[in-house]
Length: 111
Length: 116
Image 1 (tube, each protein chain N blue to C red):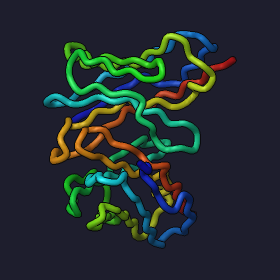
Image 2: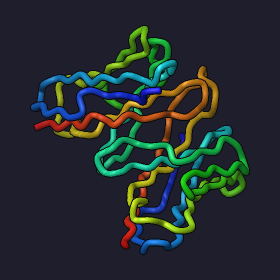
Image 3: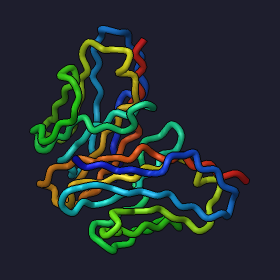
């Protein structure tokens, strides 16, 4: 089985722009979660989607949003980028068991 | 809310030394517990997991036992190699079942450096 894939792997944006990140889960997995990793805050949960519905949300401003498509692929969007949004964004998929499998991440740099 | 506390690093060891990384948690209910490892420039890889009290997870020489009485899940390896140099994260989740809410709560990570 192919693993979780994320595109793009690297992004450079400037303040005020918006960005969309994509995640393709492991085939058959319906749950996709997103996490932000920064040196200062560590790994923080953004949100989780299951069968195209947001099921859980972390403590992030409304500038962070996401969606899931019928094929379970997910996108997250960050609008009006700030310097503090620079981070590694990780996507994870989960099937019936409780194990989340992570993709390689998208490294976002905001200048 | 749920929380995970793990020892701060960096932990520097010589090859073939014994490694222990402490992890304690606070959670309601009966969480599942995980150790993930992150190599430089990569995402997280599942190292091992345990889903109920007294379960022992093991993989690649690493072991951890789910201790409900002490709310701990310490990671151990008897003889480390240079290739074990990485950042290790302890985490907990709500529990099994695809329909259950799904969120991992992570500890702050412990950087391990193994010298030859």
